[in-house]
Image 1 (cartoon, rainbow, N blue to C red):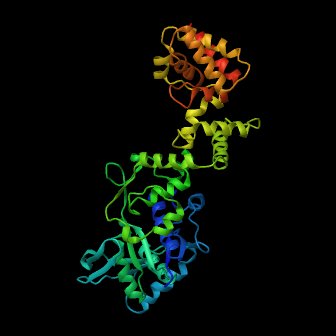
Image 2: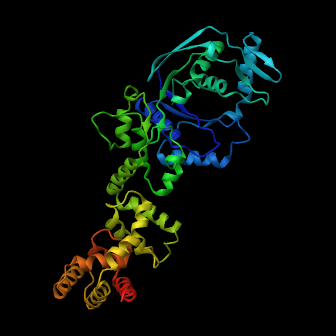
Length: 431
């Protein structure tokens, strides 16, 4: 049996991280079994469905690397198929007309039982199920009916979806039985929760996948993180490549309880991928981020930007974090951390020390980290102060921040002119 799964987004909004996780689980399962991953667009809501949402969803799936097999199927182009299936039930006396709508009467008192590959045996009495709409009065199919028709026609073997669809399964099984079609295996994965263990929502942070992309999370990190929301490879492993995930993905390791979306863990995971990413991966991403902020122009030197990247890549969690920490190297105007200013630039003699350091640096014949460090330590010894008394105020004067990479390497990359200008501007304000 060839494994066939599907992801079925509605283009009524952008791709939610929960939907992205559902798509990922389907994709991993299909690729693990050398099966097929199909894409079905549930776009029968003509009022809310929009082309820009569809393009965003498709682009997000491509960005994550979740390639689908064949061409996407659009439900809006299959209205005739759904009506013929519903009319077939009408002709057999298993459905009835209600004005322009077609309904499927549910016989009360029956027990619908099914095996879920995560939750085990489930039983529902049809007393809890209302009559089901097959075709609405506007001619469009109801969700459950369209799912059954599509999944059976396209020979879907496993329906992998969120726990919130668990209540739809007995309704769909009644329709499979009426249509005389074989149902797939059902797999209901745990919902994604916020840190307070309530269902993930905007109050917990961004829920739109594109927002994480904009901030500067790498797709490899997102895939790794989402895969571990409700599934475990065992052995307390956390960093897994896509190849690792495909090789090891097994439904038996999917949990039954909700998975917590921990943004701090995602950021840590992203930092691990950023540390390992080669410069050729970084450069186009940083160029795009700098262009978006107006910090890149035709005169920007990729080789110099590469040096800045190497300086900061081990210290940042996202590309946005990189831009925030390194802004002072890309713009003339940059924010000063008030706490850093109070702590480092309000010290007695800070202005005089910065002016003296600027004078000493100006006389350097060679501008590199070794020469800068030598000048700093020699001046500190002459002034009978600690080198830190020069290093800390200099960092704030040049970058606006109290922490960062090695100051001497930073000044070497910042350049002599920029460094002297900022040291003297800060000294002038303080003196």
